[in-house]
Amino acid sequence: MYDLDLLRPSVAFAMVVEAGSFKGAAERLGLSAPYVSQMISDLELRLGRQLLYRSTRRIALTDAGAKFLPHARTLAEAFQEGIAEVREERLGLSGSLRVSAPTVLVSPVFTRLVQRFAEQHPDLHLEIDFDDRAVDPVASRVDLAIRVGDPGNDPRLARKLFVTRGLVCCSPDEARHIRKTDDLDKRMWLHSPITPERVLLTGPDGKQATVKPTWRLVINNAAMIRAMLQEGGGFALFPEFAVREALAGGDLAEPLPGWSVPDVAVHALFTERRTALANARAFVDQVLDVVGNRRAAKANG
Image 1 (tube, rainbow, N blue to C red):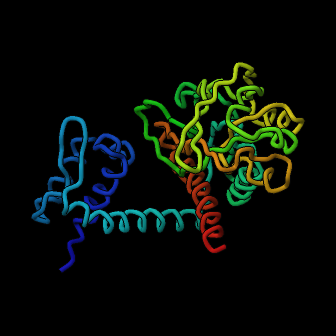
Image 2: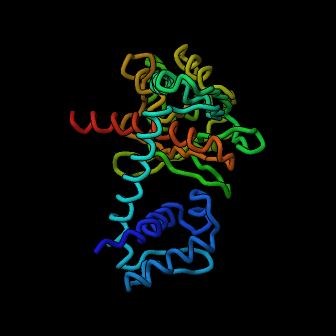
Image 3: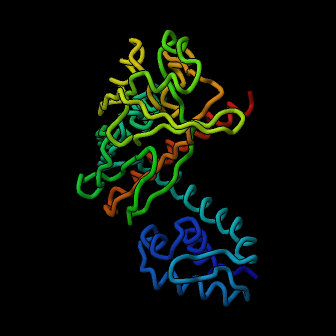
């Protein structure tokens, strides 16, 4: 006997866990939070097992919920991928998509991603606004905001895309003069307006050091920071994906290679404009596809 009527609440269950709340899942599904909660309660009743612990502040998986979650996620992902593939094959994407992104994404990797996406969807009007400020997606009238770092306490749907290493970068000539963490204190630090005032470094032995240069230059453009680094001006922090090719080509160097800065998370923030939500998700899927392919290639040597 097939319990086909359990498919929808199973997908909703996977969404609740991913979003971390009934409200977050409801926003993604276009339903009310009480209705989503009732669906999960009905699912638990039919299965005869409690799947979630509920409190006023958080939800948590029960043992039964942890066992059921991989199967529910498989159902949700397969359904979404199937719908997206058929719709894209028949109609492609249309309408418009406005994206806000930090200037650090202006890199060969992101350039190729945008070009590929535009070629695949010629009927879609794509507009990308690069801005290093933590813009409010709704106030800025964008459909999707990509943020590198902490997305902040934003009530809208925020999805973590991936995590990348943070690197200290400088010119190859400058790297020859940086032997220890104290050497960074004496050099100009190029950074964006939202960068913390201190640089926390962790050595190969787990020892940590805090760098707080007094010589600082705030620049609201990552391309300008990269250009100044190549001219030998100081050092800067970058997510690894943004400078990978510059490091490989010898345009930039990584001083203190045994030391690292905290990893950087990349998030996508969606707005409430439902007409553009499918377009925004398709763009995010393209980002994840590129990141996934790169990780697979790296893992395979």
